Length: 355
Image 1 (cartoon, helix red, strand yellow):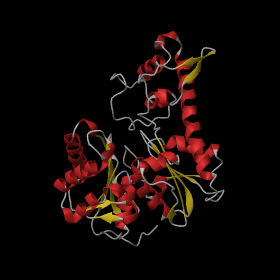
Image 2: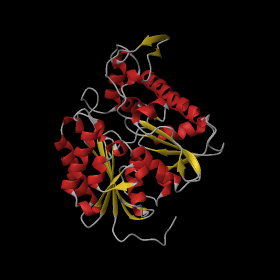
Image 3: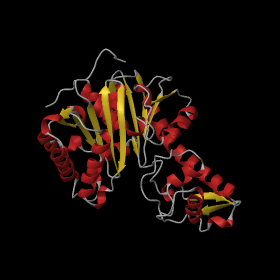
Image 4: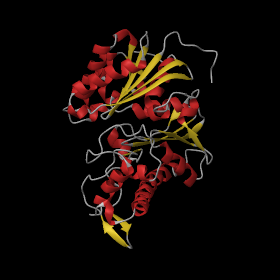
C-alpha cells in the first residue's frame, strides 16, 4: 500500500470486451470510486460499443481523467481480423476521449499512444489478461492469478515481479491451457460434459445451446445477481424455475419431469465438471515447479466463487483481487469482477512509460 501517494487526476481503466464493457475509476493508488459493467453485444455492430461507452461514461461521472484501455472485443466476427478490430476499437475511444488523456495497453511495451497502438495490434489484441497479471505481480510476491469471468478463464502464474506465462497470443495460451473457454455465465452446458448422471442412468446431452452456466450456478445458489447481464439462452426470465427448465432440456425433458431438487443436483454435477476442468489446467501449470508450494491463487472475475473452491481443492491459500484495493462500499460489480480494467488504471497510475 502507498497511502502517501495521491493522484492529481483520476485514472479510468477500460476493458473493452465482445460482450461487456468494464470500467474502473481509480482516485488514489489503492482507492476505487466507481466500478461499471455494461452489456455490449459488439458482434451486432460498432454502434453497440459506442452506446456502451457513452453509458459507462455517464455512470463514471464528470471531470477530468486519464484513460487507460485494454481489450478483447477485437475478436468478435464483426471484424475481418484482429488488426482491423484493434483499429476500430481504438478509433471509437479516440472519438470519445482526447488523445492526450488516452493510453492503450500493449503488454510488454507498456502503454502506447493511440496511433502507435494501432500499429502494434498484435500486442494490443486480447492483452487484458497480462494487464491483470502484471498488476498483481507488483503487489504479491508469487502466485497464480485465476480470472474466471462470464465467458473465459485466464490462468497466469507470476513471481518475483514478473509474469511467468508461456503463451501470449490466444492460440499460444490455449495450447498452454493458460486460457480456457469456460466461464460462470455464458458457457453452453454442452461444452462442459458429454453425458450426465440422471435418474440412475448416464444420459447423453443434446448438442444445443438450451442452457448456460448461468443457469447451473443460479440453481446452486452461487451466481451473483449482477453477473448475468445478457438474455438467457431461450430469452425467458432468469428465475429458478426458468433455469431448471433450460437445464432439463439438455437431457430431453421438461422441468416438471422431476423435482427441483433433482435439477439442483444435476446443476451441481455440471458445476463439478467445470471445476475439474479448471483444476486440471491449474495442476498442469503448477507442475512446472515455478511457484512456491504456498503460493496463493488470486481470484478474480464474476466466477471468483469457483476460484475459492479451486484453492481449497488445490490446498492453496486464496486471495481475492479486491483485497489489493480499499473496500468498495457501493453495490454492484466488485473490483475483482473487472480486474483487467482496475489493473490498467493501476498500472497507468504507477507512472508507466507512454510511447
